[in-house]
Amino acid sequence: MDKNLSSLITIFGGTGDLSYRKLLPSIFNLYKKGHFKKLVIISTGLEDISDEEYRSKVKQILLSQENFEMVNLFLDNIFYFQQNVEDKTSWNKLKELSNDIDKKYCLDGNRLFYLAMNPQFFKIITQSISQSGLSDTNGFSRLIIEKPFGKDLKSAEDLNKHIRQYFKEEEIFRIDHYLGKEMVQNIESLRFGNTIFEPLWNNKYISNVQITLSETLGIEDRGQYYDSTGALKDMVQNHALQILTLIAMEKPESRNSKDIRLKKIELLNNIKFLKGADVHKYFVRGQYINGIINETPIMSYHEEKGVNSDSTTETFVAGKLLINNDRWKGTPFYIRTGKRLNKKAIEVVIEFKKLNSKLIYENDNEDVDCNLMVINIEPNAQISLYIYENKSTRNNRNHNIQIYNLIDKKQVVDAYESLICDALIGNQTNFVHWEELKHSWEFIDYISTEWKKSNVTIPQYKPGSFGPKESDQLLKQDNFEWWNNL
Image (cartoon, rainbow, N blue to C red; front, side):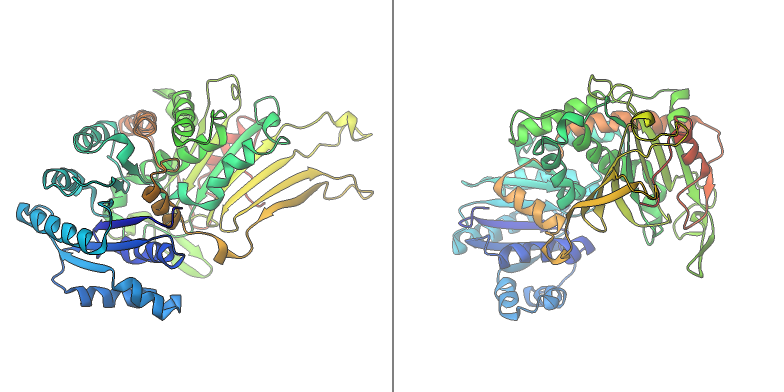
């Protein structure tokens, strides 16, 4: 990153949990590493508090950083602005404050606007930023937007059309924090930077790919939001499909963000769309019931605060996706995600095809272990290979070789820190292009619509399990099984 960069960062929703827990600590880390020539933050919120009161709250969060002198220097560059975004008069005042700060601190007119508020305010904020003249400067003007970007294709298109009246596509940074995770960003280098992998990365050698995004927690205090959304829209539409594109896309012409995102768009366009009966054939859902984990009673989804007692919202999704291109034709990609599962993990398992056993064993009845590549994004941030090893005892024929491991988690850059840094330098590689979003919503809408029409009872699963038995059947019909205990 250019360490001569100066910028004003305005956080709309500066008193929210995301800002306190992720955004401000991430910006501080960039500041501490010397990534800025000059940096000033304006945090907006409804609370009637002074700059000093707000700085005091931020200080409590950053005290664990230990470098008190650096924390105090950072706090001096934070200002608080009380604002109701629907109050038109507030925008002229915010513009005046921004211009005064820009002039005083010599920020070169560079402005990054972070929308960390409820999506219902995205339209009024983007419109007001433009119409008030906040984005009319001699420097760059960029917009980071948190998910969800719409609740279906129609609402996403409506929101995008509105925002594009005021910001160009190259100025819009639609954030998916999974794309900021270090191991996710390493998938491209793993594939295209190693000649031992790329020639095997196709349907000739790979039998199936499994993508798991599992959580041990329930919905916590998100009952009302989650019950109107569900796992399909909350996790599959964005996180799961984004990981899939990086695993399956064709090699880009260059490392330029336009080339990379073009290949992701092409991949999403090649995913087989599911309609009618195919939805139930290729996708299953589930809801967790009450149970016990580690001797702790767990309430059912229907008992969670904010959830309707007769809700049909899914807390688990598993699906089979097929890609209609030469590289992947016939190779299934399985995805699953859910709450209250056996373990917390973000993991990709690439299962290679088995060899002819006659080349290895004298007894033709002996089975051959398949090779696996396991990309553990969380919690361990490591890549492992499971390969055949000839041992005299013929036991444990699969041998795990760990080829990459981030043992020291202090060295792992937080996803938000990485993405904010990218936005400041204008690198859109790890942000979602509108065409990616459009294709993903089209795919999800078909599934969601079919589920709404269906009277099929939603399968249930026990907390601490790997989901409903229907998830296992999804793979068994193809003679595969989930790799649960690697």
